[in-house]
Length: 455
Image 1 (cartoon, one colour):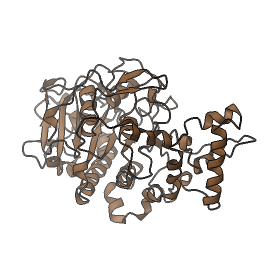
Image 2: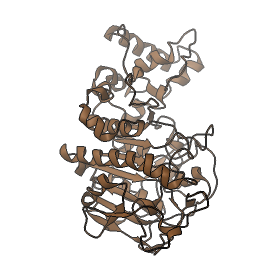
Image 3: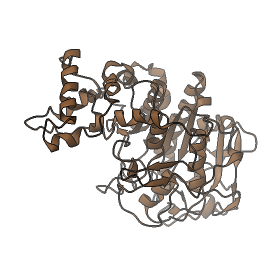
Image 4: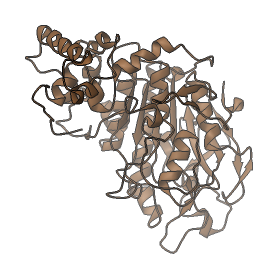
């Protein structure tokens, strides 16, 4: 989140504007979000107050995690053995033993599929928004459909002064050095609905978010003077360049300043306050501690946190080569610890019923192992895991064929999955929102929530 201060002759620095409440600095505009309270609620019954999305960017191998095929030929079944879970008759891969003990609280979907097999960006966009744009790759665009967290934060703003939508620990790139992947941003809803991106490693001893804390010298009198400055800019007493920085501020401006007088955000990021045994349980690595930070944020009132498990699309779960070595030695142990600790933590704190947890990627991997001991992209069938927040505990939906190549029962699309997530969050898939030009858009016009997944 480090950005250089930008100054003009008549304006405070960007950091100072942030400290005065104009937090568009983070791509987030609290007054605009607060205005959502005046737009009314949707008709869907909300079963989740918050959502944690753990996105396995790159495409995790369903055949080695949640849908093993022990009776298939060796070139398909791979190296891993199945193990029993806490749900009789359901097996996971042997390197997910901790998660296996929580299957009785989860819904496992084994029949997801879509039409994007080549471009990570396009597949991520489909998985995260429910909108399939084919193999059109490239980075995030202002015309994209908005992220789930952007919509959730708008329609159900937090009840305390805290950021509604956070994404961490990376803005995942489409390949190293490439553009940011779509699906995490506000899109046509506007930059005001982008998440707060936390781009620091919570596992580092010096982890802190300085930008959320006002300087010691920014006391109430100075805050009031900053508010007056913003009023002056709003009424045309400064340059047009200055006006553009505050054009979204209106009668909700006062409540934006509440962010600086509340300790909720500051306390949420103080991960060092967690007991050592809890931090150890999540895993002392950037992803485990990011999942722990996600729990702290939703506990403090944030509506949604997305954990993107890769700095770029090819860095982690995109296992074209050395699939089994990478899964066994790194990816699966880290995921196993983080997700099982999260479910245990939420359950112990009586929050699992009202927190929707989703673990998924953009597609799966090929049934047949390639010559580099890897598996390639496979969009035709893949698995994902959900828990809490209104989904059925101890349930498997759909099935794949004998090699995990195609759905054999109850196929579902990303649009269906996203529509189901929205349903749990109290948002209709048919909700109509408008962009900055007042054009109407329907959230997920061709998806339908899946009643069988819900309690």
